[in-house]
Image: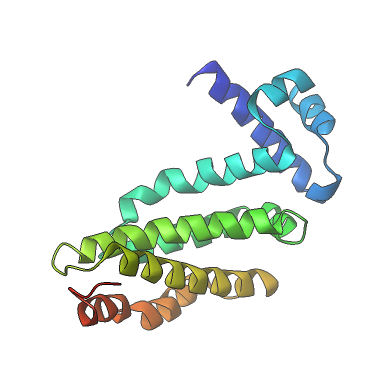
Length: 189
């Protein structure tokens, strides 16, 4: 692991520790750097602000493991990975959700779900020829739907069992994307 990566991870660990005891809106760069023994200058060499660090955490900790599940066969496992990460980091995720950083979390979730769906759509497109515009519209629509379900779960304080959520989402999505792409195959959009 590079020195830069070790430094970034140290700051990420500090932010997560601090978020367990206070709202992210109250956390300042100085608090993070004091916690991990680094300077403000070092912080700003890597991140623009606390929310930039938070975005790095989500990207690094969730996206890295997701790629292997970006297929039509395994997308449910990818969804479960995101849900499990959220449960494992309950305090940090709920802290973000209840802060001005909520947009950051929702944007991140949209990117994650879009990425997952895009891979699924590309997988389906191996046998069904559809326009790039339709693929994008499909990914946007279903990513927005998944973010909505996820936000409702956060509002409910993560009460629903993740396995039940995956089954519920699978019922809604299973076959619908394939059906949509087959219905509009070879049509310009």
